[in-house]
Length: 53
Image (cartoon, rainbow, N blue to C red; front, top):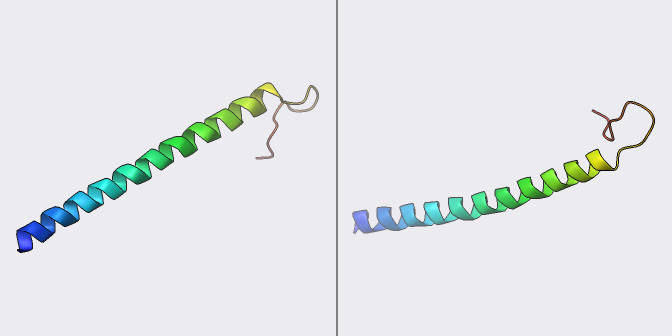
């Protein structure tokens, strides 16, 4: 019974990690798109950076 529960727990962990990694990929793509839009639409004058870091 214990090995069955351990395998089930492993499957749930792998499923959860895969779901989280898929969401993180979409977040990374969204941040990349926002960065590219900011890079293209930066102001003409000033330092040329559209962010304040």
